[in-house]
Amino acid sequence: MSNIIFRQVSRQFEHGGKLFPALAEFDLEVRDREFVAIVGPSGCGKTTCLRLAAGLDFPSGGSVSVGGVEVRGPGPERAVVFQQFALFPWKTVADNIEFGLKSKGLSAAERQARIARQLELMGLAGYETAFPHQLSGGMQQRVAIARAYVLDPMVLLMDEPFGALDAQTRTLMQEELVRLSRVNPRTVLFITHAVEEAVYLADRVVVMTRRPGRIREIIDVRSVREAEGWDRVERIEEVMDQESFVHLRTGIWKLLREQQT
Image (spheres, rainbow, N blue to C red):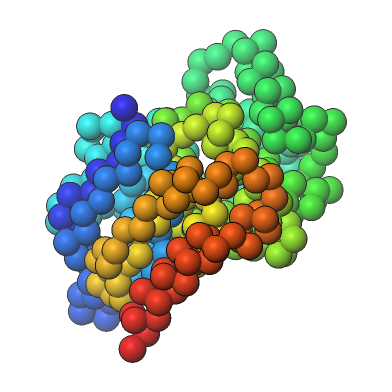
């Protein structure tokens, strides 16, 4: 099992001698191999949730567990993809993807086999020897995702991974992530400001309140997707034109707008 469970989580930060609450009474379970997106107002604690699950930060109260084990730091079963590509500029595409594998004790042949699979999966075959500066933004993010997937993690934590991309590339990467999720499903916690992106990608969308962040509502998207046959539609614009998609998007926007008043 690779579920993520937040139990009554709170997180406070100190600034200028004062405590500022980021999260309060946050309860959520991301089920095994489920894709959950979190949306909410700026500063509501979305990224804090992801950092807690990654073991890059720790709760002031409550607990976070992955696969039934309390998170006490980073672990190989969890991979993180950030908005900034964070690639090593002096390493080739293949070397960037291989970086995390070297700590797993795999033979050179096994590492190369895994790298070749990710290059093919991400449409990067033929770019093995290219350096990051020779790639487009979308291709660099594909390398970052391949570097996460090659470790075969149970959990994928993604913090606005397409936020720095132009609109067209972002759309292509969203379609790519949907394809990857079908071929190689993982438990995914996805942070985004884009409502359309959340509805298109996620099985459930968590809408958060203003700071301190709490769960305002959880929207079930998967049942609508399956009932309406979104999985049989190849292009994102064809999904976004469907009445069911528009209904979900509008409903989430209304919930978010309530937090601004």
